[in-house]
Structure formats: C-alpha cells, structure tokens
Length: 90
Image (cartoon, rainbow, N blue to C red; front, side):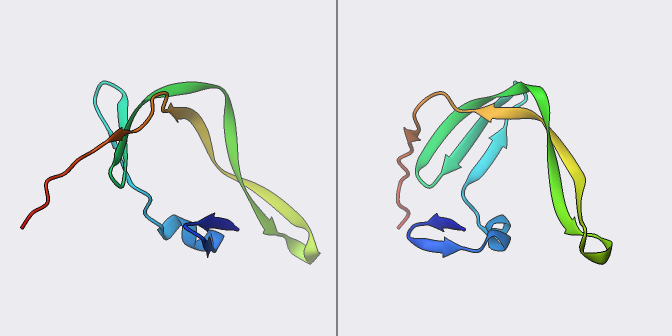
C-alpha cells in the first residue's frame, strides 16, 4: 500500500496516477517537472542489470516467477528542485 497526500492508493491504480512530466533531451539530460518544481538529471548505466519479475500461480497451486523486463539504466537527480514561477492567465 502506498500513501500519497494522506490517501491510500491501491497498487493497481499507481500506474494510472500522474506524478509529473519527464522529458529527455538529445544530450542525455532529463528534466522532471512535478507541480511547480523542476529537477534536472542524468542517465547512468547500472553496474548490474536488474530483472523485473512477475509472480503468478502455476498449476496445482505452485508459484512461478516470470521475467518480464530488465533495467539497464537509471536516472539520477543530484540537485535540489528549482521552483518554477508561471504567469497566471486572466
């Protein structure tokens, strides 16, 4: 269970929850905007790949783990978020 803004979120609904906007530039820099804050980050290769696995029930009550993907890079944000001030439209 994940708690956000004092509300409990169902893990199945997390993928449908928008947290912000993530953009990538051609130079490998990433920009994450959450509300009125913006952070700049960089892509870095992981030393070891990380497997994404999914647990599912097999035949006769057994449990199977299936690899559904792998992660080879990570995004790092080393600076504090910058406040974005927007003009209010009338």
